[in-house]
Amino acid sequence: MKIVIAVHHFPPTFKGGAEWRAHRTASWLKKQGHTVKVVCVDSINDAQTADLRWIDDEFDAIPVRRLFLNLAKSPDRMRWEYDNFWIKAHLNQYLAEEKPDIFHLISGYLMTAAAIKAAKQQRLPLVMTLTDFWFLCRRHTLYRTSEQVCFQNTALDCVRCTMEEKRRFKLPAQKMPALTGFLWQAAQPLPPVAKQLTLVNDRLATLRAALAEVDVAICPSQFLKQTYLDKGFSAKRMQFLRQGLVHIPSHPSQKSPSDRLRIGYIGQVAPHKGVHVLIDAFLKLRQDARQAELKLYGDTSQFPKFYQDMQQKISEAPQLREQVKFLGAFDNQQISQIYQEIDVLVVPSVWFENSPNVILEAFAHRTPVIASNLGGMAELVADQKTGLLFNPNDAANLAQKLQLILDAPSLLDRLQQNILPPTALDAEMAELVQIYQAVLSQPIIEKAPYST
Image 1 (cartoon, helix red, strand yellow):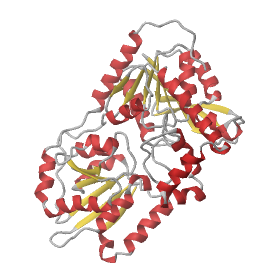
Image 2 (cartoon, rainbow, N blue to C red):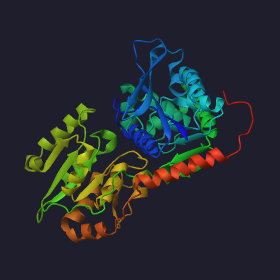
Image 3 (spheres, rainbow, N blue to C red):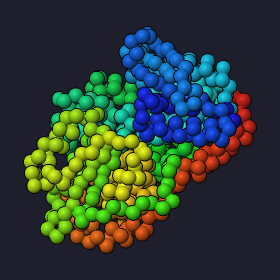
Image 4 (cartoon, rainbow, N blue to C red):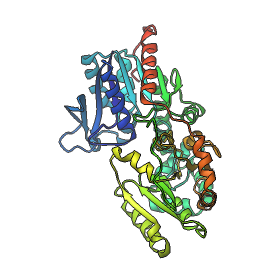
């Protein structure tokens, strides 16, 4: 088969979850003899163009078409963020030249609804992997600027979230959420709010119609799948397929010996990841009979003010300073070594998450997980079986769970024994190929190409 994979970014320029998903998918398919090309966006603030330019590149022997946009020059920036006419025109030409058997879109962010429209205008079978909540939420996360989980996700919630990026709206929302909620409800008829509501509803309608044109949308978690369906967003077929791991140790290395309970965190040091909740919980632990240490692995550069605040918090408890260590970013080749040095992993995110790779990696290394009882985290961690769940954003409740393990090491052993290896990449990719083949076997229905 000849496959074109479209994704918002691609290594080595960017190295996030969706980027590596696209990379490992393309690499695996190529090794199986398929022809694979990738299209991605490298920049949206490119000063060298007034609209869109591109270069052809190669990364790990994968051909890559890299797009450079200047969104500041777009005639309607808000619309171009979710329905980019430049992307549509370029992909129409590119796909007409390449003539792939399958077009596989990952995420939708930056590629926008325009990618779906272009693929359908070329009458291509279209598979999509939903990696977050971008179709429902401009911020991708359903986590509001006022630092609250967005459970309702109404158009008014979207307007509030955008407005609350400004300090004069954000602070009241954080301090008086009930009152500000009432005021926003009352403000809906006002012209500035009504205008924003129209824009948000246009975005939702456009993206709902675009997703409906997708032949199969792959959802890495049941939670994400159900969230889309509950909001009235669906492809022709919504299929759950958990991501697989590239490397699953056949015999996970034994933990290195330690008298302390070694609590680990692996991920971005960022507010939405709940690092502050974990540190607050650690500072509440009673360490009379046994000591603990907290090891935090991950990039500290993206949220420097937050990182400084965490350092300040630790410095205010000098007796624990030596027990909390920020160990920075690491090479993926070191992951097995890291898991040898931690006894339990904590995933304290305060937003929903989708299907956190870090939990699957922990299970691959027979490491129990303590996670927020929220979204895709709660789906992966079986409470009291493969780990423990705590109330989201609740440092006291997390401290209670950590205290259980600190005081009863046998609990950790029992949880570890219940962990089963996660899905391997080969199994995931074999199922993906079956999805491709099923879509290709469907008869082509002749109808006017989707272009609205």
